[in-house]
Length: 395
Image 1 (cartoon, rainbow, N blue to C red):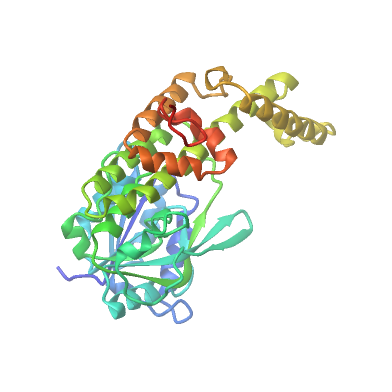
Image 2: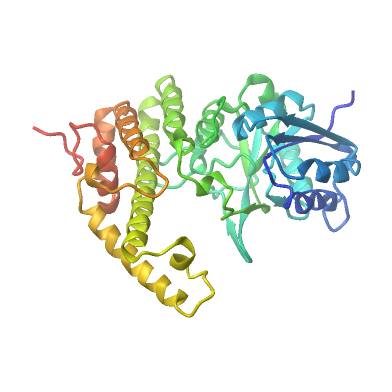
């Protein structure tokens, strides 16, 4: 069987309404305005991951329009990590690229990326992307000023106090040499439902030989979907804890351990801040709805009645007051958030303390002390008892 130039791996669950946009964007890559990519050199591997919508019908419609189109079907959802790993097992391409089922490509991306990785002779290439929220478009730049040059991947990790390439983990924002599949570096941690790309990107930057960044925001990343795991708070969101266990494992075994830990610690504190703030926001929303006696539609102003706007403003004011009150409380006094069991928050807290304890004490103290006042107030919940929010060890 011939070797395709590019294998494109697309895991998806219940994305049928978005798939025509995705596949049309791929077909357009083969036109002159779309970059004249040779679609006969493209292998598409689609993983229908436990979907229950009409995805099979859409795949039947579009599959015949591509020369090399494979569908893998999972009766039950296994998650992005396992789906991508399934695709890697089937990939035959010289190069490999990932895409999510609700996203699409702008013209010229496949031609640009394959030309870049071939011309620069690097292990992988990273690129910018475009976030899409309703009718809004915003270009997100990969945090690397040096463009179109072969670099040591380790230059994409530091400095610790700035956003770097390990803070830009999106698997779909780039292209990868197929030889990385043979080394296992493209495989994602098994059974991860979220945060699957956190340790993955660290591994690439620590162990690959070369990479480059090019300027093409050609992946259009759809945000704000209610079905997206980024919009859900349950046990799956706690997998960032496991991801950082893997990151710390990588660093513990690295020759530059002392240089790398401050960066990883700062990333860790940022994610703790994010998740704790998110929970407080959810708890405040639940409390405000209870106090005002509003349902979801009234709180958001969606109900078609004259009072909807007033309800919505009352709700926002009540949420602000609830956040102020909750943030002034002890962690164990935080009220339960709607649909989120307190046991889940306790699990987040206990695991957070355990993972924090893996960071060398001097590094953790320094990074906490260097954090903003707001961040310290949030991460205090997750720190070992011997570390306080000032970043000082008790006497």
